Structure formats: C-alpha cells, structure tokens
Length: 520
Image (cartoon, rainbow, N blue to C red):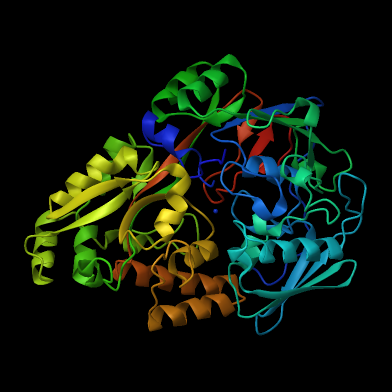
C-alpha cells in the first residue's frame, strides 16, 4: 500500500484525508554539526503516520510522512536544519564552479554503513547514478545532472547540463541519500535496507504496514543530533485514532485537530502551533487555453483569483488553523513577498466584469478531478466559482491514479494541497517548464530569464531577489489561484519538544528535542 502524501490539516475529515505535509542555496559551507547533547538512555520518540512507506529502497523513496522512517536510516549529503537552512551532512563542505555547472562535495571521513563498510565517494556516486537513471520519485529531481565522478575516496564531483538552483536542497532530501552499493538493488532493500544514517531498522520489532522500530547507532558521527535511543513509527490511518493513541500513551508526539488543542494542553501535553505547513491552490494549468479556452485569457485567471473570500475560508474550513494567501511560496522562505498578498481582493462583481470583458458574460463550465485532498473543500470552491459564473463538475479520481491523472493534461484546472518546501524547490516545481505542478509545461520569455538568473546565482541574498521576481510574475500573471496556507498543531508528551516553526517542513526526527537535550 502506498502512502498518501497530500498534506496537513483542516477539520477532522480534512485531516484524515490530507495527512502531514510533505512534510519540501549556498555555494560553500563549513563543517558544523547539529546542536544538542544526548538525552537520557532509553528515551523513545513514538510517532504515527497516515500510510505505509511504499519502499525503503534508495531509488523509490517518497517524501512526506514516510521521510520519518527513511531519513533516520540513510545519511543525506546535506541536511536542512529547523530553520530551513542547508547544513553539512555526509558532505562536510561543498563548492560550485564559477559557471554553476560543476558541484564538488568533500565527504567526512570515518563514516560507516550499518554493516561496518566504509562510506566513501564511490558509494555516493553509485547511489546518485542509480537514482538518476532508475524510474522513481527522485529521478526527475536529478534531471540536470549529466555525470557523477569520484576522483578519490572523499571527493564527489557532480557535472550539470545547466545550472540548477534547487540541486543543493535536493541533496538534503530523498535524492541525496547514500545507499550501500552491495545491497541497494536487492529485494531486501525495500523492507530492510542498509544505510549509513543515525538509526537502523529493528526487524524483530518491525511489522511492515503497521509499526517501524528504529534503533540509534552508537557509532554514528552526529549522534548528539538525535537524542532518542529508539524511535517507534506507527501507521494509523485515522485522525481520531491518532489522537486516541496520544492520549493513551501509545505515541508521545503528533499533530492534533485544532479543536483538541486545549484538551491536550489541560492534560499536560506541550502544544505548538505552526501557521503554515501546506498550501491549498487552484492550479490554473492550461494557460494557453488548449483544453479550456477561457484559461488562456489573463482576465479570466485574475477573475478566478478574485472569487475567493480567503479570510472566511480559513475561519470556516480550517477553523483558524492557517492563513489566507495569494502566493504559493513558503511564507518563511526568501521567495515570499508580503506585498503580493494584496493583489486580488475578494470581489465577485468585479470578477464577473472581467469575465464579460474576456467574452464570457455567462461564464463557462469546467470539469475538475475530485481527489482525496480536494474533497473536504469542494463544496466551498464550487459555490465560490459558481458565484462568478463558473460551473464546476467534479470527476472522481482513485487515490492511486491521482498523480497520473494530474499529469495527463486532461484537467485544465485542479485543486491541490502541497506541503511547503524550500524556495528553490518551489520555484522548480511550480514555474519550471518541467515542474511537476506546471503540468501544461507553460513557458514565458520573462519567466525563463528569471529562472535562469536564479539558477545561476551562487549568492543566496541575490538569489532571493530573483525568486521574489519569479513569485511576482506568477501572482501578477495568475498562473495559480492560491487560497490559504494550512497550519498544524503539535502535541508532545512532557519531556519532548517539537522544534519546527514551518521554515522547514521536511519530516525528520531532528524536529524533536528531549527535555534534557542542551540547545545551542
């Protein structure tokens, strides 16, 4: 069974449908380890996730909640800290060439796989090459890579066909794991992989599809970043059952419905609200009007953006656990621009006038896919669009067919919920001609120049200006109809703290601290 990895929370039905967000550049970095000291022996972090990991083989790793399991088993070349900043991982430093087409990484020495075999540049090269040449979730992420070289045991050289501003961040995710060359292609890798990460899978206590028990390695190079001796990840597909497991002590950390926050507080749990972990967006994908002619007109796309009372939606659909938005970039990232939130005021009358100017005084009809993530919100969106003359018919799409359905170009518009990510990856996913949310492969000369500038820029501060320009282009040209960010509410047992603030939405054990864990 594949995990469903749409994201985060609204009311109880939406929570059960969505799950936790997938829950996502520097030119060089110095060697630094995550802060923190080891906690008391025997400490256990117990979490629940909505679905079973599809596979633990390096070439088939899915992001979202599955990351809690595989990110504990595998090292990644870089890591994201809880502020979303890139830090050294298995690679202690990195540097780009002046043309941003060659990335050289220097690995740490002394790292070992759980079998005791040394981790070296050859293992990194083999893993990267297999990921980029094997059909799987991360193959497209490495599309800019032409070759990987290992000139010595601690040096990895990645050659690119074009500059790729998202590559460094990608190397902190599934595309940057290091697998054991001897076993990564074996059948056992899917359920019992050999990794070099901080934990190993305890096969005796693990039941695939039900519970995954992870044991910390005492010989791990960055052990102090992981204060829990054991991690227990349970698969619980129902939000109410998740909450009950927390109350019963079967788990000790997890997200809860906003209506239950006060109850958990009163019973001794520590709670933390994160205002934005995912974004609900109406993708206006057919910007050339090939399938649905009206969408080829900017006035129509602007009218759609004016149809939503975003503030009211947050109150009614999310019960306040979120915030309105008109942009898809993470509000904690450098691409986000607060000024853009004032672009489209809620104004159905003005929206109707725009539709009339575009030649659609009576509106038009559209068929959109009914997905697991869209169902809780469909009545509200149907009414909002009907109010300006757009009639929506929802066509049911089985969960296992959702990815292929959206990529088919059958649906000119669709409603999706995406976990927030880092700015370079969001720019790639939403605005690159090959981005997975740019399903009609839209391009524009101005946007092409902005993307190229962002990809070539090695100075993060200057790159931020380029990403904000990309964001501005997207909002002003109404490529999308973002509506609201979805928040999350964490509850943790006494002694455990959730350290995230939404800057990084990657689901990693590093987001949790123990009471006796020193923080720097």
